[in-house]
Structures are given as structure tokens and as C-alpha cells.
Length: 366
Image (cartoon, rainbow, N blue to C red; front, side, top):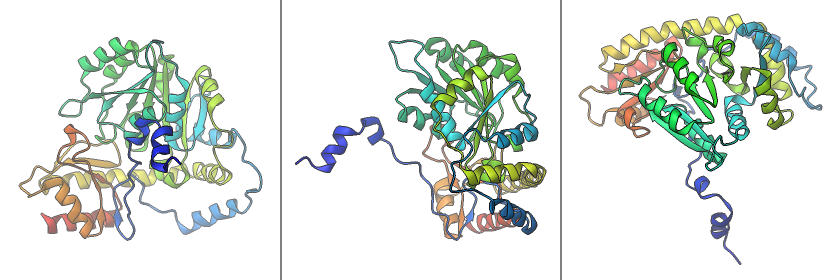
């Protein structure tokens, strides 16, 4: 009889076997500053009102397949023009996967291709691998700006079916210039996805690109604004694109509890945006404090700060990361993930008290 090891080797695609599962660290009992979540809870009154809504959930029935009330709430909260359609996903990850499944190669002699600046959101590459697409990561400059000659050369030579431009970018937290973005969109014959996961903390959005270009879609999420536990992503754009995407979306992908919770949260979106304002204020304070401790902090338009540990400290980023865990503080160590991120750490902005605990721990370590 064939061993299970041999069966796995025979049946599982080699590129899948070569992967590691997406890593999620154990944050039990720790100050959790590693996952770009909104750290603020709802008030007791708001939680009670939400719980009363959930009491009426018909969990014995399938959810509405299109979640129209959620879409209506999103349009109102995010000022999305009526002429653009909306499709919902179980987090942005599902939408990225749907986009990868959607496209056919422009050149039938090669596989379809996803392109994105690197370092960027790791799921672009992982999902390309899951779906059997090629992935091209074009390195950013040493200061995490777009390398325009390299980007344009890649587009001209490869004409990727999908280009992901995260604005702000993760893990670098910066925005690229609008003129550069326009140049890339105009050079592309494929779909260009503006990934605005961190929009609530940014000084700019890109919905106007939908008016200007037929090949642009704008993707967003409610995870960073304070609803990470709901897993609700969305993409806006012309119906010609989203109608095709809807054909491969799993039915009932947005469950009953998520729909009710999202409808309720969007009615109180001003509270979530108020929390985001607190995070932005703390972002400024933390940037200054980390700089005073000797880190090189890059300007952030997101709810986290990318910092390079260039101070005279043995082991630097990896050692700081490990010692912070000994102080029950969990951040993200990026060293080893990409050459441009050597000696880099990513600090999610927490509450004022959580950030205080981080700073105290860093002062003790350094």
C-alpha cells in the first residue's frame, strides 16, 4: 500500500507543498501590537444595542446572497457613487482569490500573472501560488518608493493580468504619488486593483480612479476600522467587472451574523472613525517616541509604524522582538522576510496604555 507521505507527494501540487501556512502568533496574555487591529472596544451601551439586533438573527436560514443592506450602508459610509457596483467577500483575502480565479492569460502561451511592488501584502503572492498564477514582485527603492523604470519595464514586457497597488502599502505604510499611479494604470492592459485596506488612517483615497479608468477596481475592508472579527471585505467598480466576479463567488459567503453586525456598525460608523482619529493621534506620539529611542521610523499613513532598529544594540530587530515577548508585548519582526526589510520591526498602534507598556518595555530592553 502506498504510504500517506507518498500519496501527498503524488496528489498535492509541488508549489503548495513548498509553502508554509500563513503564520499567526499566539498572543494569549500579551499586549497585541502585531496585526494592525483597532484596539478600542465598543461602549457597553453600543454592545447592548448590537446584542439586541443579534437576538433576531435567523441562523436556521441561509443569509441573503447579496447582503443589500450591508452594501447600502457601505455606500453611505464611504461615499461611493451609485454608478459603481459593490461585491462583498469574506475578508479582502477572498476577493483577492476571486480576482486570481477570474483572469485568463493575455498571452495564451504563459500563465496569468499577478504583479505588485515588493515588499507588499504577502497574500498577493500566496494566492497567486494557490491559484496557479505567476507572481512578479518588483522591488521598491531603499526608501520604499516605487521604482518606476522597473515597474513600467515589467508592465511593458509582461502585461500582468492583475496589478495590486496597496495604498497605503503594507508593511511600509506609505502612499505613492498619484502621478506615478496614473502612469502605471495607463501602461497596463490588465486590471489594476487599488487596495485601500488602511484607508481610515490615510490622507487620500482613490475612488476617483474609477471615473477615470475602465481597468481599475478599488478594494477595501472593515477589518482595520475595528471589525476584524467579522471578516468583511468589499470591492467597488464597474458592473462589467463585478458581474463576472460574482459568477465565481461562493453563494452565501457573508453569513447572517456578519450581515447584521456590519449593518449595525455602519449605522454607527462615526464612532469607528472617531476611534481611528485616536489611533492617528497615538501614531504621531509613537513615531516621536520610537525615534527618540533610536529607531529610524518611516512616515506612516496607516495604523502601524515601520521602524528600522539601527541603534547599537546586539541582535537588533530579532533580539528586540524576542525580548519584547519576554515583556508580554507582541509586535511583528520583519527581518528576514525581504532584503529591504532587514532589521525592521512593525509596531501596530494600540491604545495609549498599550503603547505606554510597549515604550516602557523598550526602554528596559535598550
